[in-house]
Length: 227
Image (cartoon, rainbow, N blue to C red):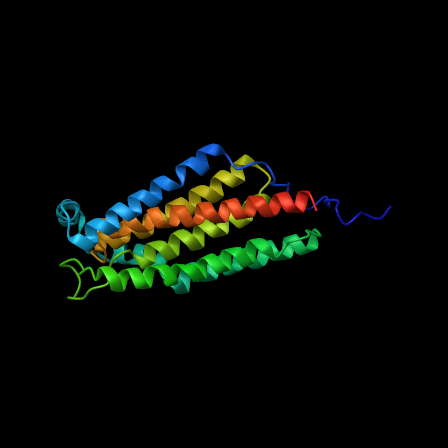
């Protein structure tokens, strides 16, 4: 008996049409507010920067290992991983007959494209100098490497999530992405490529962006479940 277009195939991901948890909707403004606060302090050279300077002095210890960790946030490394996951997700979705199989990979790519459009103007506007461990220059706030890593690895997990059937696999995916982002963040601060607040600000910004992507994917899942 032929399968109706509105039926999920056996290989299709489970529907994600449940309402978004209220905790997420209420929690998204918090990282946004923290990002605005840190940006304001950087712009006006506020007292928070003095704490940032002291923290950097305590943490900076340039070595090869920290440099290698920071390289995990390079576009040449992080973005190809996202591309590979997106291609896999698109293939699985199309093979399963998902109505909007193209939405997750396209949304992830668009979000990745949005990162430099947000980060670069902020770097130019804040004009923050680097740490003593790097040559004199400005434009270090927020951390572009941290944002690249967070969005690339975070988006990869979010679009892959519907195809991970077991709780164990999902935990491994989330854990791997978190470890990669933390490794990049640690490497950037330890090597002296960024002040700690540069990294924390990127965390806050990306938390908002990834939260928006997650809500979009849930909405697309609801549309697929109810064509």
